[in-house]
Image (tube, rainbow, N blue to C red; front, side):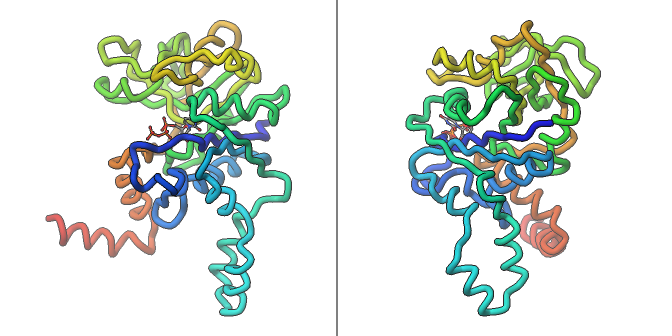
Length: 284
Ligand code: UTP
């Protein structure tokens, strides 16, 4: 059973400037919830009990979001707004189950994960990137249910001309759902890509990955890449990709973020009818 999850939220979010100048990218809302809250809820659905955030400067809004807001709660009580009060109460976690570690320099996803090393002992740990938002079943719960040790990533087939935006898997045995990872390369050009099976931002990693990350080796974009550290584990322990059942949105990009807002609003029975008729009238 996987009990801990790391949420790397130390990135700069440059593709979303100026929105992300003072606001963490992970606090951008899809409909009415910030991206990071979707990721935390997805992890909780998988039975995760300890939530480790790797933050950076200008990320304190994330800490505040998962804490009490006494002034707000007092006002909601005074006004009898019990539904709103329940919403803010329900997202408070057990004391001691949420921790924060600071990544002083955004030196890459691998570096962010390595910053959490002292909070993880000799146990596998989940990693969730909040900007990969998944509509449908909890992706990390699906992965945890299939996990038998070693390393696992969420996997998805992408158009061949999109491989430069993802870590790409060299597939071994593949039953259509679980695909054995025999090679992994970060952001290859389509002509160099070993397949069109891409890694999406959900991982379960073996603690040995932390040792590999400690070498501080830099890869694509001169960043310390998690993909490279995972690739070095191939042949040493099991490594699988899981094609998850949900629909993934790249909320690190403007188009993906807009699509996510529309898809999540259309999945919301209160909003969907009015939104559908507005889109029909406005754009047809
Ligand atoms: P991205 O590759 O999307 O980078 O990070 P970014 O800096 O957030 O965004 P852009 O590309 O400048 O627009 C993927 C995930 O890894 C985290 C990010 O917060 C995001 O959740 N990350 C990335 C870190 O925590 N630290 C880093 O040094 C880099």
